[in-house]
Image (cartoon, rainbow, N blue to C red; front, side):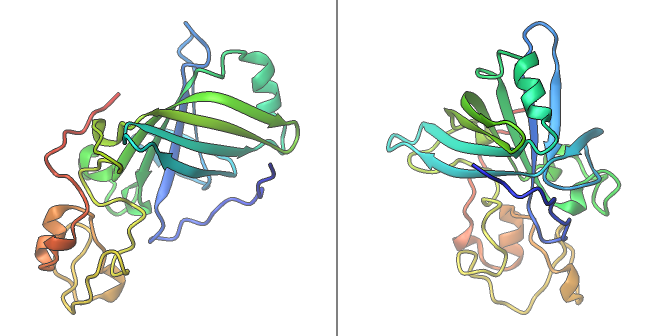
Length: 222
């Protein structure tokens, strides 16, 4: 499977996926942080820019198993070398953090508490991989749904709205004139009108009936 070698721009409205791969070198504690953007540091971790995509998310009818395909560029043959050095890559773990550019270290909201800067988190395990040397590697990931540490029937369980829900989009449903910043402060600047994805943000807009999160869930950290 091929993947574009181009890295993505850090538009302020984009949802960033940050990948942490670990458990592939038993006993050594090695970790690899990467994302499809350049110049990303989050929670003091520097993420290596590497073209990648996460696709094919699906949940079983019981709502307890998640599967996805992570495709990563191997244009520099980095993954080819890693595959030779680390034979235990299958069985390793992948954590995916979702955040926004504003929440990155050094960003306008980079000083907020960690719990407010992570929109959601998914924990998966590498079950298989297909490597095309010099082109790409595709890793099949699956695990119990652990976004926010819990599962609900037939859906991902998140304390906040799913990061794929677009503010003022069809699923969000908010079309009002009142505008707020991502931290919930009133604003007259349309460029600062953003949603923090929490229940409080929906309440500010009198739109809590469309809230898609489960605020009673506890966040789990590694």
